[in-house]
Image (tube, rainbow, N blue to C red; front, side):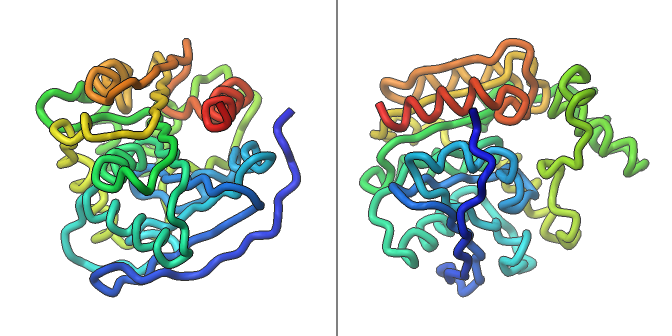
Length: 268
């Protein structure tokens, strides 16, 4: 059964190469597991499941620049820059090596971290993510239109539907912590969108040395599941698990199964 107790949290700030303050949060004891959230989200993305890993790991989260308690500079962001921010947090905490689990845009950032710093990542989990670039499987125009509609409530409802199935939502009415940081300034939200859209790690994926697990919901339309085999074809010795019937938020909707699979992989 998933743990429901919440270990004491230690939080603070690291400083990025450009001086931006980066908020981090650490819970539990044991080997560090760094959890990277999706686009335009802060560390609360992980609130529903991070305790599942505390039997074996301490969990480390961070607020992306532009979100939460981190700085919000108004200049272009890139997933490569977010990866540098991740390393800045690890350096600040004196963590030489960690396990890394990134979902959605966090999975894009995790690709850069693992490829550029193979000595820092022990095991890698990439969830509901994409290699980016021209070879990636892109969401269809209907999805793009549903998220861009002028009615904010309708756009939010569309995002919820892309994250979770109606059956799961009927028993889990929210509130949901995966729908974006409501306090983000508009400039930061735009920079996040561009950073995610312009991600392209195709050429560096073969440099990933860490054992890698790729996870995806079979019915994910926000980030199509066709990206999972693309990643697996580029990352050496990667293994893949697809959650049938799940959408983008497989990690919550399939929590018991997904948590067990990740925990087994990390402790194998």
